[in-house]
Image: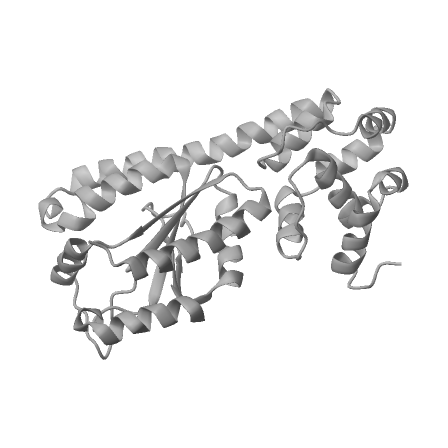
Length: 299
């Protein structure tokens, strides 16, 4: 049985992650677990841990999977701001070699959760080799299944693969096709966004360019008509860098529902400053934009 105190730690950390990730509007899924006692014992047999040096760091673990590969770095940077990171493995691809890329983060438990953990550690010697940390893994939805297979069928039983060089290359090759498909998926939606831009389908252009979990509310009709009449404004909007816009929002303290109108108002204020769209922006949003993005009190 998993201790209820550990489940409490997991739930509170998960709630914090869900809240922050949901604020971004990004497309993601979040998985979490607390290691079962049998899994802890099994890992102790595979790893060399010491109470004075290296301890087990993933008693509580999370996996964030993003629908698109370019969102991984955005989510990693967000988690770096949320938690005290003590270790980060974020491999970058090399032209001359191929191997699965590690994207894992180990963080110190926040003060409240650490207090619960320390109470457990004082009550049982079972925690002597376990650190007051938790792990976050970052994956794409396309690569998630491969990592599960690799972890269970190869990583946990390395002796089985000692003489299987060709088979290991084949397994890695399957990952290579998934990595290629991740890039193709992003490129496809970039092309779709361009198609809708050329057709003056502004709502569809925003949906496929930003790739956020938009609410089912249409873009304001007057803004649609304005963009139809002012193609130069629509062109500026389309040419903006998608990740720059999202990072600008995430790095602020802004928080608003993920609607086409709200994102149009935000993008315009932060990057375009078109007078007509400014005039359509609700006063409460203008006040937030001025305060947060300009660092000044609203007039």
